[in-house]
Image 1 (cartoon, helix red, strand yellow):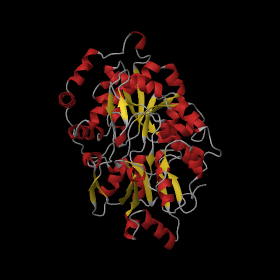
Image 2 (cartoon, rainbow, N blue to C red):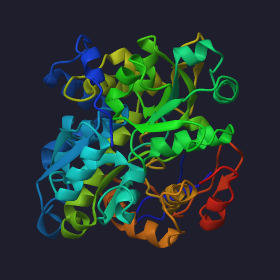
Image 3 (spheres, one colour):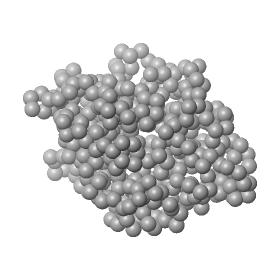
Length: 442
């Protein structure tokens, strides 16, 4: 167990580019999300969180004088995925007002759109793929631009889905897929959501762990998350890696099965982050830390109870956000999984938003891992200054300020150690050797 402590306190705490296919939103227009009237919902949420919510009416602390946010309105982009929830709920529940800002959530169509709008200033910040920011910063995911990670939004909660056609031929997991590819020769197509992003890295890692070279044995395409299900329906791919709720939606629609979850690839892996440009973080530090504090409050609220998780699901299912039915969202955020073939299980490593702040710290080793995989797959031609890049992007200073405002514990160490599905251990100590250690690579 790692020891966490509150900033400023000696008290230790024990923790824990896309296709043009028809959008899958056309298949979810008839969904009927259960919605509470806004006043009733806020009253219920306030009751659930107690005195913490009462502070909203006071204007909060650190929102005046020299600490006053430089920008009061903050436009934050998001993609329709379950893990946009903390950004959405920070706005819906008014946690942003507590810190002197107003979050304006902006629904985006693709990760490329998020990237472009961040870079050109149309968005102040975004719910965004960890590896996307690193790719842009290094000029391998679009035009080069200094980027900043303010905090991690969630761990876990993504999956790899295979088509029912593959499952009917015995490809229900990685070994089954590898056998099918060896015995039935044809072009197999798989989709990820952004070339340097998390889903691409999870997909490549999983395929390679089963002896499948993602750049030689199969074809890989890029598809925006909300379009995954529609593309599989019309036969554009054999499988995909994406965030929820789209894996569960593939099962609900009878077109796909879950072959693995990303938490089975790497338990408590980093996933989405709250990201912005380096220019924004430099120019508006008070705004950035207020944004961190507000999203931390929302993260803590989501993970506080099953009731809060269900209220979150009811909220983000709305067409303004994810645009699907509540039951497609609320099962997996409670850890209730099925694979689409009759198997069900309770997964304790489901999507986490807070875990006493252990989720949210922007560990340098997390960012460095994505660099090792970018090098492994030839996106980076030479080894970068792994630690130097991570220190430049991950704004631990801003995160600590935001955590202090929200009274959230922070870890003592900026690195962490993890074991992945193939038994390899990642601790950030020798990234160049780690990147070169894989049998299957470019």
